[in-house]
Image 1: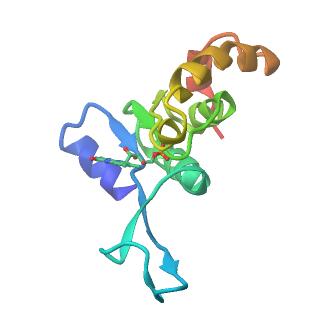
Image 2: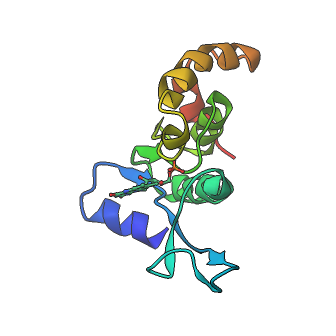
Length: 129
Ligand SMILES: Cc1cc2nc3c(=O)[nH]c(=O)nc-3n(C[C@H](O)[C@H](O)[C@H](O)COP(=O)(O)O)c2cc1C
């Protein structure tokens, strides 16, 4: 939260949240880290709950537009991010295992919105909890 507030006070027009979180993977055969750098950036579904929590927290203290990112793989995930406080979303890791992830999620979105009675995505900008 202090970083988001500092960015806002420094004149940021918006925030992108979150980046990767630092992880560690160990190769049992070599008993060494899988990555030469020992630790590395963890992305994908494992970080989604953390991203949602951080976006939710920052939304309590900032009205800047937030691009939500971190583990989004489905239209349902997009809705969760927007309910947490994101104004738009970014999709990273999912595009590595399926290069068509973005267009598939965009095509699914209206169907999933219908399922949950959501008429406009921008209505979710008003969700607060
Ligand atoms: C291969 C790869 C490269 C990335 N490069 C950058 C980068 O150069 N700058 C940056 O801010 N974030 C970078 N990221 C972080 C992503 O923008 C994103 O914040 C993060 O991967 C979480 O989203 P995701 O789970 O949808 O991938 C990179 C992520 C991956 C997987």
